[in-house]
Image (tube, rainbow, N blue to C red):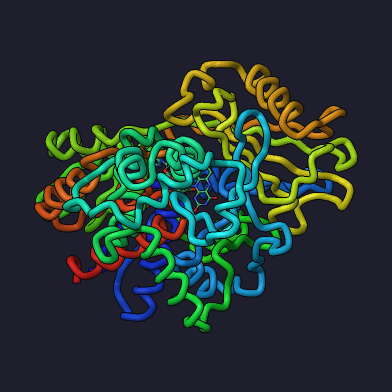
Amino acid sequence: MIKKIVVIGGGIAGLSTAHRLIELQKEKNLDIEVLLIEKTNKLGGPITTIKKGDFLIELGPDMFFTKKPWALELSKRLGLENELIETNESKRGTYVLWQKKLVPVPEGFLMLAPSKVIPFLKTPLFSWAGKLRMMLDFFISKKCPTDESLASFVRRRFGNEALERVAQPMIGGIYTADPEKLSLKATMPQFIEMEQKYGSVIKGMLQNKNDNKKDSGARYSQFLSFKNGMGTLIDALERSLEECISLNEAVTQISRNEERWEIQTERRNIEASGVIVTIPSYHTASLVQNFDTELSSELTSIEYASSSVVIFAYKTKEISHELSGFGFVVPDVEKSDLIACSFSSIKFDGRAPEDHILIRAFLGGALNPEVLNLDDNQIIDRAKNELEKILGIQGNPELTLIQRYPDAMPQYHLGHLDKVANIQNRLSDYKGLEIAGNAYSGVGIPECVYSGEQAAENIIKTLF
Ligand SMILES: Cc1cc2nc3c(=O)[nH]c(=O)nc-3n(C[C@H](O)[C@H](O)[C@H](O)COP(=O)(O)OP(=O)(O)OC[C@H]3O[C@@H](n4cnc5c(N)ncnc54)[C@H](O)[C@@H]3O)c2cc1C
């Protein structure tokens, strides 16, 4: 008998799940029917590319990481290899806003520690006392690996300047998180591994650099996008799944009916052999509440942060800053309304006409949640005023857009890995129920792809 599998949620995790199910159906000649149900009228969640005149604008994510290979591999399987583009090598680099001025992050400074001596010694970003403190990493003995916060780890190994001026805005910025609460083990375990293996993070980074040099096989830069933006990936997934997608339909409950699952939506009841839930964990919690309150409360305990992206296009001649980098991050101690800013048309080609610059400013996050209480015009004004001061902008933007992301970024707080283990443990009681998405094992697009594909593989293993 044909087995129906319902995927709930049409973000990148849900689309990757459904796509992998169809691949497995073809590879193994399986008798399955896949249905993906999405609440809104669009797929891809925050991944949205729009065209406005000659501008190609990313409203959400603008690239993906290639060291975690799953998004790149999916792109290749979808036939998108020729659409991939790399970041603009000639302008590589990031600034930090420090004492109201943009200071380049020294070359070779990787998230929380230096891996190149000369640029590190020369940078005005740290005091001499701060630089000496960072070098103590070579001598500080390692600690038993525990679930330590980003702030505690960086303070312990490198001191306060490294935390305040780079680690908090860079790593905290990626997760829009509070570094005092962010679990390093759940987000960047490689630094804990370096401490354990080499007794020093800097030694570990130097060793990795040598290993990478030997690895001549790498063909792609670390970050990629598509010529026509990240929406290319979503469109290709949508095309591959056309028959199986239902938009504008919210799932309101799932329940068990002996060996089968009942999926209730706003307009129908669906019976299925399997269900894969890829929506934010607080929504998953309400769907499973009726049959497992423990699972539901574990899911609810994962907190989320909100953010907002404001996009501006300016004439290049109206900006006095040289913009020789991909953007800047803003330490919390700067007390700015911005948490980061990306120079989109410098980072990737084909985003704006030659004589214009496309800029994306990020506001909000766990450390600045109150910004989201303002109305759109107020948020735009705050972003504009800050950018005018920081970049020396004279004229008015030719294009302005704002996009809000309420409760979109799960917070991997201390204890996150235990939470995920508990959730997986509860799920093991239920044949034919899987979860995936950014709430559990990585927020980046590659990790979301992987979590969806794994959920698809798991459900096929349990059902056949
Ligand atoms: C502003 C921003 C910028 C980012 N930049 C990057 C970047 O540059 N690179 C990167 O790798 N990552 C980036 N990320 C992170 C990454 O984009 C996300 O973690 C990822 O897209 C989340 O995918 P998902 O499928 O897990 O969840 P979502 O995309 O949130 O998908 C969940 C879907 O479920 C639907 N849904 C919810 N409830 C129901 C229901 N009851 N029934 C049916 N459907 C439902 C929602 O409408 C949504 O479409 C960024 C995130 C944000 C917010």
